[in-house]
Length: 388
Ligand code: CAA
Image 1 (tube, rainbow, N blue to C red):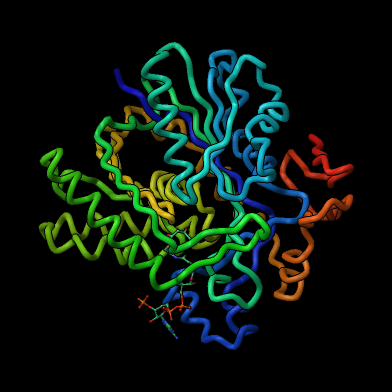
Image 2: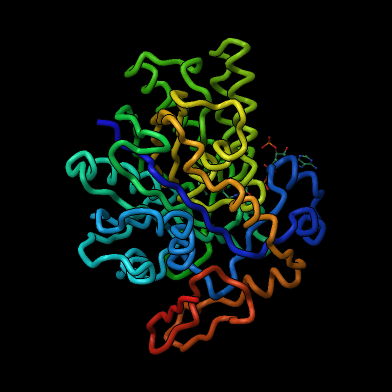
């Protein structure tokens, strides 16, 4: 039985900061951010958006076109959850007015959470082929103002419906994965800012890719020439290319050209949005599918997932006949084109206005535009949400 991604949706906030302007404000050569890191713009979430609202907004691309009574499982993969106990998933289920007869929970393992949700959903559908699973990969990447990681922040969510006989892409049963307890990136529970050993995390990302790729080729007998494209987790757009370059010499010239060209297409959205942690790999997949004019049904795509801490996984998917009809390319390009640019001073103001790590009541900035769903604030330590 084929199982995989039947639908995929995207949401990213209405605001962004220009990274050439941010570089100038930080006394850095803009080319370092734009060429050296490979980021041009960065999504800035207002205080009225979080992983719950962004997830529910990402589902708007398809939720009204699917049979929601078939959903048996709803998972949010995130590393920026809004509570140490209650899951974002159960709130998203309410906001989306989904049936109660759904298992809802949240998964965490840094940026690997989206893939953990996908693989759990795949197994669920294998056991219950008449059911579907709705999964989200949603995050707000925050390192702090003037931090070395500031250029690699971002915000957004990807929603996916996983089903039997998917109309978009199968998720093949060919995964190779590795887990190792390392400290390259983490976020203690007292803060909303991530800690990263930048150079070490980059080295570990590449090492995990090389290890799972080697295991994958040994287990499957496949080589780079079997892939139309390889998608990477993209903390910043240069990162995946650093890993891809280490294996490209294994390939013939035509394969090298194809994988390099398709890598560039997979980074278009990330370059404008930034790191969305759990969703970054799937944002790359979406970017590739919505910009390529060469891909066709039957093409095999490689997928490399990396979550610091760390878990790495490599698997493949096969594009399905008519897959392009399931995409929302125009809507996503409009979502990005219609955004408002914030000055660096306004970005800093928005960045610092957030739900506090305290018992205080809080009112979010309702003057700022959101998607269909809005976090209005916190009252008596309970988050308050509204639907437009
Ligand atoms: N023009 C062009 N390029 C320039 C330049 C200029 N004027 N100045 C510098 N550069 C280039 C450098 O040569 C370098 O290129 P290479 O990487 O190809 O060598 C690049 O810009 C970056 O320069 P630095 O290494 O000096 O950058 P940095 O010390 O500021 O750190 C970073 C960059 C490590 C990404 C940092 O932003 C960071 O710590 N980010 C958060 C952690 C992270 O994203 N890690 C990625 C792997 S972990 C992961 O994937 C999980 C996750 O999502 C967090």
